[in-house]
Image (cartoon, rainbow, N blue to C red):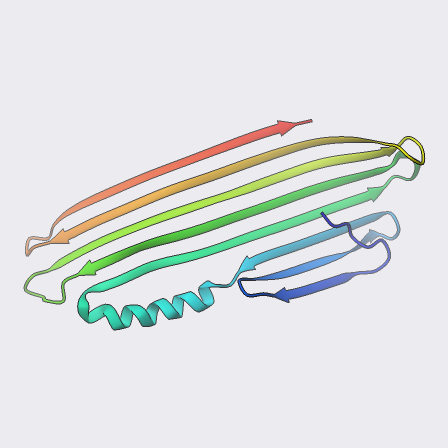
Length: 187
């Protein structure tokens, strides 16, 4: 991960085909303590939501609706302190989260025969990493690195199906959810 500049502040904004990135860096204590922070976010839903609305408007008369979406978010932070002859101490953290959904809905356009079938699948996953790092110089050619870190990974899947039909509004509903996580502490 990048280190912050010890002398001056910097900021950067970039926009790409799928995401936008904003970063800041600079000194907290001049020539001793620096920071670097960045956040990245997908922006595809700004295009996909209106496009999906147009597609669904054309399929409404046929009793169909499509469900789709994807987004991600990342965040990075690094704080670094120069302890002179005792080396460098750094705190790092990373957060990332992704979400995706797909599905469809079918419905009756005839009010005398009401029917609606909704099927949606959602998947999400993400990471968190936090680390403390000490780099102690031994001489001009060697240094000793010590690290302590915590990581967490989580993923989940959700499936939702609902069917409503008939004049009595008889319905069936199915909901499945699965989450898996893993945590690790190292030193």
